[in-house]
Length: 428
Image 1 (cartoon, rainbow, N blue to C red):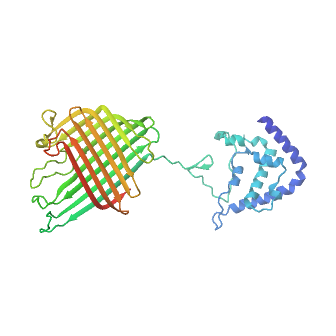
Image 2: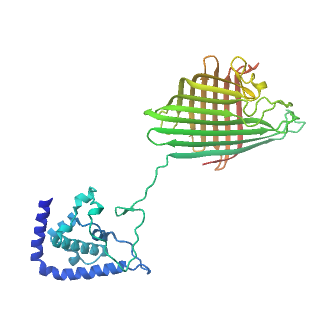
Image 3: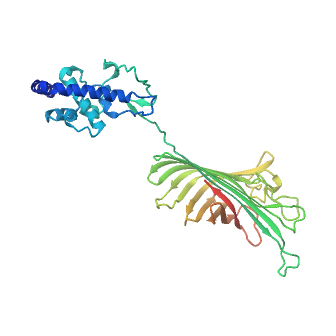
């Protein structure tokens, strides 16, 4: 570096001696032009305000040995003197280059780094810089708080959270006269649904998915003289899965699910409900593996907890305990009700909301649990058809098997539910 710099300074000395007389008029021209440029940039309060020009950066930064300036000097190019002044920025750049040549030639000790060192970010420590900034009485200079190293910077934090949701409200009305040839009865029905997702993904190891869904529906029945409305759909569920990636597409995961209902459900013409809030309350906690295969836009999650799933059921009303699968053989008293718990194997297969077409999407979830004495299986699927931006039609199918409850004469341990709705919906 020292040898290269010494050779350059010696060359500059020879060059300046030969061209001293020729450059005297040029420097007068340069001085007048730089004065005009600085004066023009000083107009701050007037209408013709000029933005900061980057060509002045070389003058106010720490002295640097620029290769382009040196190459121009060796080539004998004098752009400021020979140009036709077609562009003001070219003229100013030439003036700045010649001022730097004067610095290199008259005060080489002030040069603190080369251009290559500048590009490699080998900056001079602040305590080594002795030169102070020039005092400009005609300009008001304020250093922005977000300027680092002479460059304006903006710090933007990564947002790993993603929020989404969907809500819908549907109505059904049916009128049948008393003399209708097929018979039947008039009725009204309403269904409200809310689906919320709050998911975290750091794009590296950690994922945390949270899904909350609420379904609440009512229907009237002329055969029921004791109740104006009866619930025909009532579900309140929260499911959370925390995953840590161990290999590609495979996470070590912990899953928690809590599920119950909000309102009592009455049979026709009776005041004795057969289910209610906290009757039952199901909770399941498990640790296993969550497999998420790469299938393009189609998302699929397969969670398996072999022998590491804890299942808990609580029935707040003791008279309902036996019919809801908590009996003397497997249950125990807990507060005002009864509860049971056991360990087993759990399998959960989830298809998050997936667009089959531009107007049709589907959500599906399959769950299986067994403690090798009893088994529980549930499969629910929901199709949404977007008729317009806010109008939608939905078809919900739910199949369930639970051999811990009382057996039905016709359906045995199987339970089936289907619901078709038409109404308004909004997603975000």
